[in-house]
Image (tube, rainbow, N blue to C red):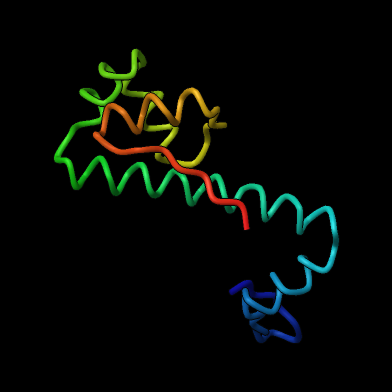
Length: 101
């Protein structure tokens, strides 16, 4: 919720209303959709790593990277290549699959 001050009182704006308005812009919608997919992948990597009880450091070692890079991946601030996702999946004992609907 964002707040704006008007006549010494605060008026709240519901975030979902703000988001709906912003997503009417095609450019904003495209960016939202792209980043949303990136965050979904990051979350899946994080959850699988935790289920396997593997540290970021060990995952990094298995994929030939650094712990800080794994942290960036899990934080959603890393662009993923198919090659990188395949390495991560193999290191976590999983299989990479891509579904296009």
